[in-house]
Image (cartoon, rainbow, N blue to C red; front, side, top):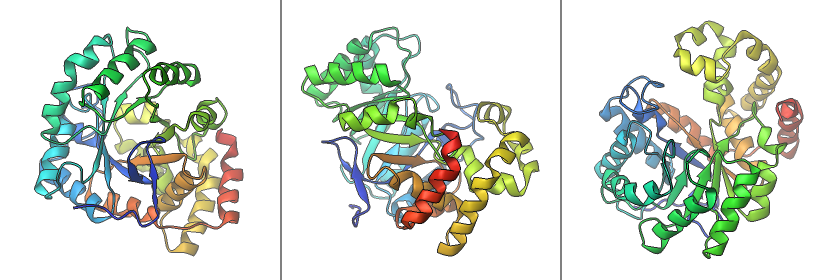
Length: 328
């Protein structure tokens, strides 16, 4: 099977694969299992994960984001088994995964790549990222190791995640010396956290033709508006999620004017608040930004995917920009 982008796609880097502006993030598939992220999410049964992937495909999404540290490979394994169940062949979709650098050197990139490929069970790695900027090795050494994987055919393209401007420049220069582009920088970016617009990260990405993959595009659910309608719902979140992402009454008050505007715009388009937020995110910078959205049930990714086709007016885009400029 293949997915018709129908004019809604963009590219992961200058020479990267064409993708829908929204992909499915599978961090949640690690829930309840070993690994640095397993404690963050509640457990999602395998059958539910399969249904989420099936719905993503049915909704037109053609790429999936996973990582080694999402349950020590559980997310990768669940993703691959779900794709097989849906009859998806290697090459029909785009797969992004990531190497975890904590207390590791660049040699680990070469040593562990076969583990990633085994977890993905026959699906190629279209884009391989360094997940965080804290390896024991230099950026140059990490990019050389990544370039070796491209040259050996183990991965197809290279990117980074959560890198600041200086490290992005070093990564770009190192890959350029090997004749390769830096395809993406995956960073936190949403209407309530626009810091990449003021700290140079977005500007540098545009300079190098590097695509921004926005993670947490709905600010961990804050941009759905559900917590503004019922603040007591915050108590049901894990302590880690509340503390790391600022689920507080103060944040609800500071962000309420934006939510009210999004609600008004959504009503006009017969859309949801989250769809409007996603539409603004992937269209405001005209192809420089794509995003990955997580889901713990199929209806959530079905809802998010509808943002791909949503069209906001120039005035609506500008209003959202002006109201949320305080979060730059």
